[in-house]
Image (tube, rainbow over the protein chains, first blue to last red):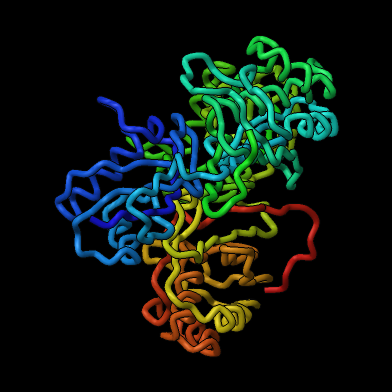
Length: 252
Length: 252
């Protein structure tokens, strides 16, 4: 059976995250249900990232194996006809039978939007963190650079995570102002549970003057979750892009 | 009692329009309810524009008379503490006792957002019209100029409207591309019922090649609603700004 890979955008507001769970409305379950309506197949969809409740995606990657005669490139429009409007398939293609969207990922990019205008924004409430308190944005920009590199990010991982190692390589951590929005871009070869949201929460503490911008390396080195900032809320977070393809493997 | 004027932003998605109605969730009723919770006053709020179900506002203007000792400039933050997050007060001030936000308006500006990328957008579905069919956007830009000026806009008015005259002066009607969005800006000294959405619907027919771009003056002159395009859906429409202040009165 051919394996189909899809790029999927979704508004996470009304979902309990990506991954299927009993008695919860999730993106994975919704997509599986709509494929069942389209082709009659009860199949399992795998995703590149388990986004949490309220987290959005512009470039989630999913795969599934299908016996349907629908050509791969037609899957996008066929499934969009069945999906609710808060999930859109942006593209579809055939991939190798052993391609797994999470394991094959070379790097992923998330971004996080903070709306800085008082008194918040009715239109942005589920699309950004509304935060118009005074923040030293220059300090946040400087602090962000401290995350780049290969580090043990145990201090930036919520408990309950079960990964082999907590070493990850961040290749980009930028804070940028775009009009009323403060936007953070974080690219890494992988992320621990809640890692992006804890990094954002830590940068916010830097903005508030509670953590000095040059303390990031020390907090990373401590491997102590209590030294980092709180986990930022989900509605500002977007899975932007998952990259695959040929790479020179990093040396361990 | 002082009269307070407020600038209000709202996400119209979950409201049956601005104006209070029996058994419907409206922006006006919500604001009146929250003022009642804040000050104990059962008062009536007047707005500059009755936006329809699903239409948004970035700059709706409302007024009300209050006996509360809350200083005018503190009303914004006080009421925001009671309002749901899809309604935000952006500013408040005292105005003259006879100031009425609709009658005193010199001109209003609406804009309409059309998302042009296939296959639509999960994030934009309640913020824009999703329309990725082929459109001759250059023809739409040219046609838009035909609306500018003082005209009888009876052809661009839904039935059921009860206004003294259907003459209005459009001072701006622009179609612009901003990335994936096609945005239309329309400024006039007043609008008939559904006028913006019918103008947008007509420009879309121009984009589809069903109405020639130079036909707009003739359609206006016909005063025939059937000659204009369909009423565009509400979710792309935003009340952007209401302007007041000294103006040389137009000669009738």
